[in-house]
Image (cartoon, rainbow, N blue to C red; front, side, top):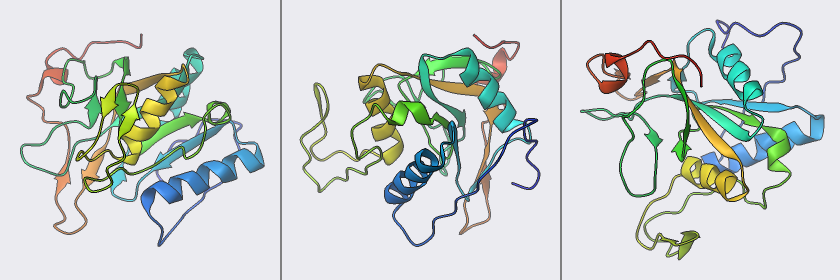
Length: 205
């Protein structure tokens, strides 16, 4: 975080939550942001390394899209073969049809490098973040989407909740983050031979 290039004329409050479930920690940080009147919350997980200009890029894109409640940088799952944690629809696997550098609307993106417009939180019923695990038998996760015996992460839960409230969710193909496995020391990143890199002359849309 010391290497991040912050925008000019901003105040920054750092909030670190330890020894708490991830969904509860994200909820607490967002509540703190509303209390202090912060216009944005930027989540950066401790195993995620964004580019130096990540915040400036995310902020610029979100300010050009007032209809969007959040925008996420893109990182890959810690598995081989890896894939980006960005999804265009429920139950259809990872989404590959985008270009490096492109800003595009999406159904859900990981919260490990996500900028949230805090004003949007005021229009969402709590909880904003929630894990639904295979044993929870939660029933309907979103309108028409049954999740009995299906795992839903807090990131997908939050993105879907934004969409239900009428906000867009964006992904930033220019904010490509490294994702570190803290147990093995291995770094996962978008494969250079993957579709997004085949035509990387995209501009923000």
